[in-house]
Length: 253
Image (cartoon, rainbow, N blue to C red; front, side, top):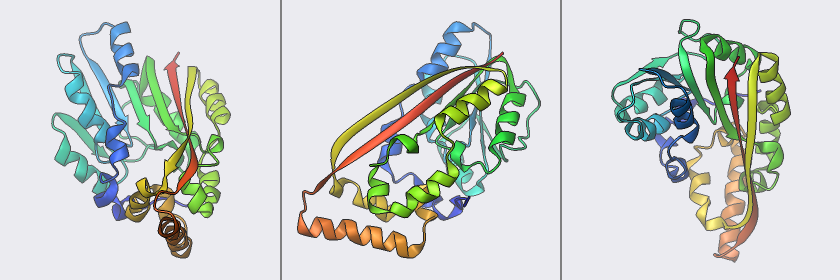
């Protein structure tokens, strides 16, 4: 599988407003804190990127003694994170060989990143290693196998071919977590709707969606031109778009 060079999109990553708009209180983290009364907690945002998740969550959990941590493989993304958050321990490193002691974290959040890991088995082994017993690993990602009409695939069909090489299906993830001794609860969110192409063309132009960096420049330019031509013919053009997300809430037994 191909991998995204995040140094090429770090500057554009936060320009995608959807990333900021979707961030709310992490209720799964809150549930963990409410159910486990402790004097302090150690939390890791795994593949923290530019720190969007941490920037949102840290103020919402004021008054709770949480030691916040972030790990990412891209120094350029971490540079952006450092501009956003304070009182967070940010480290450069790789999920397959994390620079943490075993049994370190109470809660690990892993958003929109699992498909990037080349050695997913080793990644899960490491996640299990650094998580405390009864700690929670929350894996949140899109479910590409459940969203064939995603606007990205509509205009950039080769993106689907690349994603099929990168993404495990949800059952495989579930079984691999079970195999490592996790108690797993899975929930999904899915929507299908008509969307205006005009609302998405700037996201394509920004080219911050990782899979758009993996397709050829010719395929990218062809898809972008198709979007623009559709809007020339019909500025109000709509297409059917579907989108699916999965949440694995996995407790280490």
